[in-house]
Length: 200
Image 1: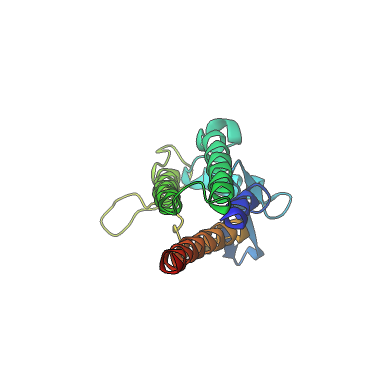
Image 2 (image 1 turned 45 degrees about the vertical axis):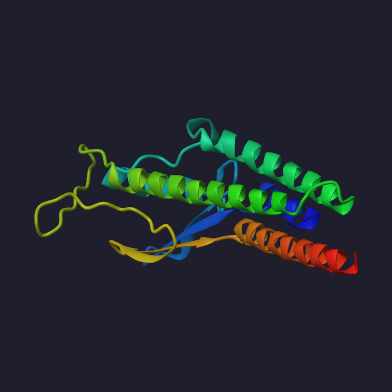
């Protein structure tokens, strides 16, 4: 329980998500890593290049930490959940609380994770769909509707001549591993309780 909760803090070190764009004019690709508190280019000038390309089709600039409240809220939430998880682990070790608190913690972190994914997808939709009508390039579909350029939440999509991939990064995998360890902690605690009950 303690180790699984500590793994959440890996989000402060490693990216949560990664988006990569590859096109003939950018064969080495452009990328941005989404951290818990910022968006950072994979290479030094990637964000500037992506913003320059986005300008032509009317997409907004990639937000700075000050422009997204999530970059302030998420670090607080993750820190709080990690500390609560560690506290639950310590209290469980000294047999001061019931294992049901592990399930409550897992339920809460799952709800927060789903809410975070929903918020991320909402941001991608806004980022790729709310285009500036005064953009230099306006591309329409066969029905005359303005095309949108929403990157995928997860997976691959073709946007014009760009291949765009969006996948979880190491921070997300550490968080998932932490949740698995905490589920194992719950099952172990239940097994320990049953053995203790049988011995009594």
